[in-house]
Image (cartoon, rainbow, N blue to C red):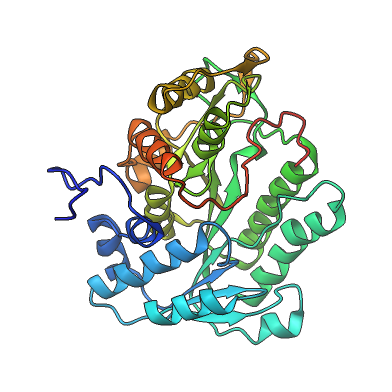
Length: 351
């Protein structure tokens, strides 16, 4: 047993990035069982972001534990040498490919299972044309290229409008209402995948994620950094959802089983609606620091209802309290962060 692991097998403290990534990529028994039944190789398009590396590694580990021989392939426009080396050590194939280049896209191997993560969010304001190209034009190219595959596609809760904080969050069959170019282009991505799902009989699961968190990034990390630095926490967007990235990874891999024609949306969120003010105060207690607030809570927020996802893909295992403990400990020890704020407090859609 790890010296910082408690009797339940849960880490009391996550020591370093190596241990963090091992935990984020550790498959559950349900994932191992599913990856043992899934037929064929798997490719992750857009693997180089915040989530892709540990997701691909979980797929690799689950396949090995299930005794299944399959290629797990990670694709991105640029695969830095350090990530390429890490993938190689983990048994993941890495391919550098500009997906918007038809010739490069055509040269990718034929694979029956596709996880689609290629997208643009941060920096969308001022680059609206590229945002729409990445988020709506590219999905059509990819569907045509992998017309005989099944897809799990990352989307976002931003396709929903702001909803009343006491309403339980938006459900999959609620009307969409994206705010701003980024969110509208994400709904466009869903529409393009749904069109090709129907036109080419492609099974698709649309994963509306809201919000993944680990120790190096996420809403909880954003709040913790504000509190630790003594900066005011703006509580106008006063409520949010959060899910541990390791739980999200496990649920995404299981989503292949629920890909459908037409494309099926599934919310991927934690079970709780968290109050920003209360979360900031929890960090203040752990840091021994007073918390400054700005603004007042609006009556609505970007919130999703995760009940269907939990029924289909399994309930998250890591609680918000555990995440807060881990994030606080990581921050106090000066743990590395990615420098990629979630901008969860944005209410006008300008990212």
